[in-house]
Length: 204
Image (cartoon, rainbow, N blue to C red; front, side, top):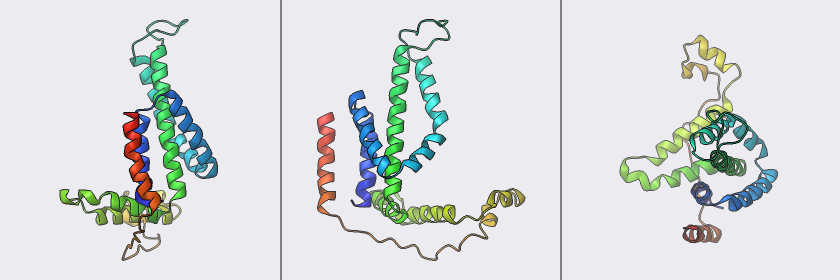
């Protein structure tokens, strides 16, 4: 599938997550579990571990800020509501599903594929003064430095007043030219673009 179509599918999935009920969300979670078992499980684990406090905060905020029936056995001022817990778990499930989809995308796409997708996605914004090639080049260099950053860089950052250019002196030299190979669209890409609006219309 074309890199641009993959990113569009990820964006469409994020929007659809806000429209579907529990059963559909559960089915999406089952499909994503199969995809993660095939590719992306390690990335998903890292993302979930980093987002654990956010997930916990979402549940607590919904549990205590949503009016409804309080859980029995607790002081009313300290008790969460059934409706709040349900809404919090729903939002947590949506975020977990989104992280799972992102993990599959990152694990199944190369850095160049992601760059091509971002570059083409930003093309319609060119009349607004946004240069897709500049954004893509900066993102490419950022990913390049993350992959080639030398050991002990954080110690050198502290020693040199957190100046990033000093810490990256021992990293691999950045390329003078960043080139992107733009693949052509195939029939499956056209089919996905046609089916996505139909899916949104069916769920509207």
